[in-house]
Length: 324
Image (cartoon, rainbow, N blue to C red; front, side, top):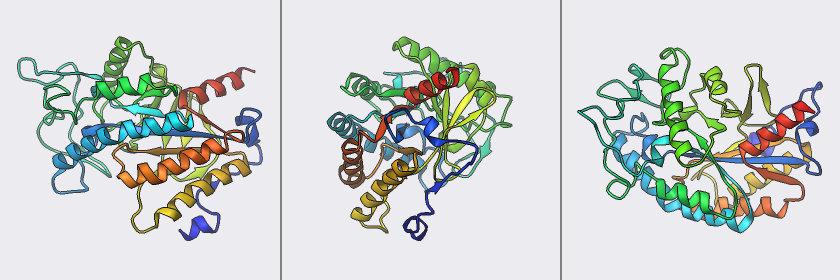
């Protein structure tokens, strides 16, 4: 809190060789990107944060089902689009094991442990119920995706891999990552969608060359909290560094949390920087109904100064800028 109040967090990135206004479309002074890690039960099934990961995973899925329609209503009310970084399995209405294996067309990573997860026994898809979205609604979400796509505000469906895998380089030769992306591409095509924006599950950044080969234009990172400019990687992809995560911090008052996000937006406008916000849709209700509601309204009220875009819209704008 002290760093925020002193103006040191998020860090305002400075580079004398770069004019930040070059990355902001006229007549705006800033751009705000908001993305959601849309993963339902898939994220927490190997978490190290609790003693019963499966229970937490299912609870996260149910919370997400409760929140997504409310979030979409707020987006319609204030005209704010979101990039929904979606686990590919959520597109499915149902799935089944064939002759034993589940999703036999997807190769498996070797056992691994990272900062957040520990996968050291069984099969990666052991917890997949192989039923349908009515029987096990925490694992499938075609109805929610249809809701997202039907709204007045034009949201973006991005990619969060097919089954929320660890994407770091070196776990394998990239074969699992490519298989997961191909599965997502095939499913998205059935929905008439193309996938342009990527968010690595669990912040496990890697496989950038493979992302480019599959046509992705951007990815989001969380190494630090910044108000900066997009970073272009020579392999041919844009990196959007996070500014802040929407999350309910119980040690702070609701009013202070509202103030904090609004002040961050003010700083983005004042310094012509990119503001990258994100959240998990399994948020606590107070975070949706109080904090997110207040911040989206604040963005709407300042819509003449800050442009709210999807990751795809912004990366397309950056590509046009590069060609100019």
